[in-house]
Length: 355
Image (cartoon, rainbow, N blue to C red; front, side, top):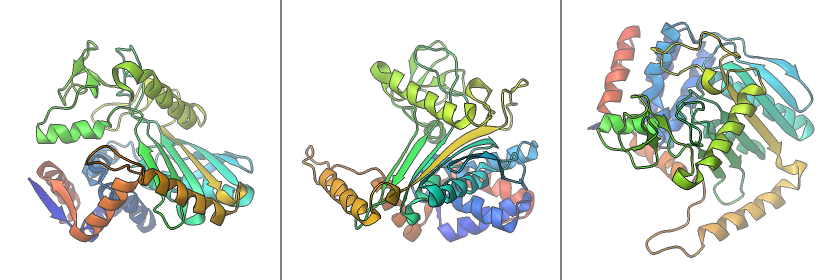
């Protein structure tokens, strides 16, 4: 069963919870906007369902509700940002602003982040560049739940990559993907619905394939994008995200990335500080006139969208399903499963905030 709540209702509730843990009004609003972007776009695994997880991390002393997010090293086009242990939902957008400001000044901006936490969906951060006629890139490493090709050990996270490209009359191109066959949040949804997962999503602790949504919880691992014959490609992409986000910034990488769940403790011997992210912004007119570029993006998008397709299907442009879902949910509300409603009611009760 699901309960549908309006975006504005969920926004007010979530913002009040973030204020209750000590976030400033500005940061609470920013964190809420970042988090609910996932629900609007239909990525339910990364939205308000995770609010209880952030609260538990704060209760465990692993999230700083009042961080001083700042640049620790920079050149005209690059920077390292220290998130001061803050909510990734706040650190991420602020770091992306640094990347965009550098792009305004010199054409491109590249920012690697340390000492942060889970930052919601990567697409939200990349899309911030679109309004400025820039292309945006966002990546983050994550809790080690993924076994590299042939490995029995969990050494990488789902490590998503997002790229947003502005168009003219056509909707913008927005790629937002995990480097695993499926994000862990999809297993969490299957657990709540008591449904099996497709083959190729996960393996058991002994390396055999599994359709059990609890396989990872029981010692197994998520599998890299590419499945049985091409997982080395997903493994490679996930590795690049880890290196750009953490080895470059001074965050924890590989198996040392701190877990999102509060009941698991971070490594006693960390190799860095917190989680890592990586952001890029490229001004389109640093390459060619923006109007000219966007006209050609329109042509590119139209050509692909109008391609001959298999019977009953049509070719999608990255970002199409999420954009359509966002419009639908703004009008009709956001459906939340009963376990999520129960978690939100529990969180609200802690702070006297009624759902």
